[in-house]
Length: 167
Image (tube, rainbow, N blue to C red; front, side, top):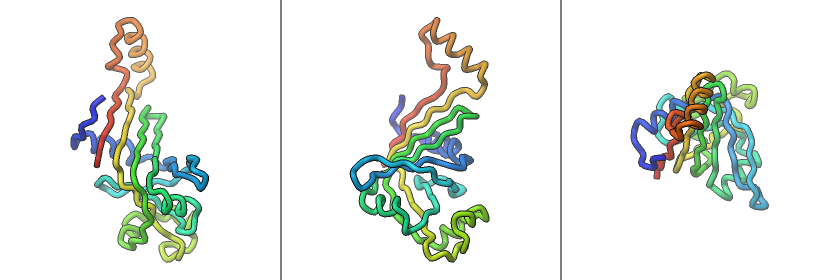
């Protein structure tokens, strides 16, 4: 697995997560344990190393992030056999321009008062590291690849895994 960051790796990472509607955000709870919850994912049109999530400023996760900035975000697309794990630092943002950019009518489900909801905020996750696993999408290709690997010892066709450092 490569650890050097290449522009194509960053783009591939973004291509994998761009259309995934929900991610799991893991924070550190009050007692030091890890706590994960689903978050609706709506990303900017271009990836600049930052992930964005709408949140309630008064939520427990916001308090956790203010205490311990390190978070993990995982994305999963089983239909395409792709998985992404992202580590980074999170902070609360009330950037109105970014809220306007990312807002969709679906956000009203969580924020009935719309973009003017006083509790509306963004969780800004600045990515430090990421790892992705991307396998061939066809079940037949996967089964054939596993059988071939078992016989030949060549696991190169089972998919791609790459570590990316942003820092």
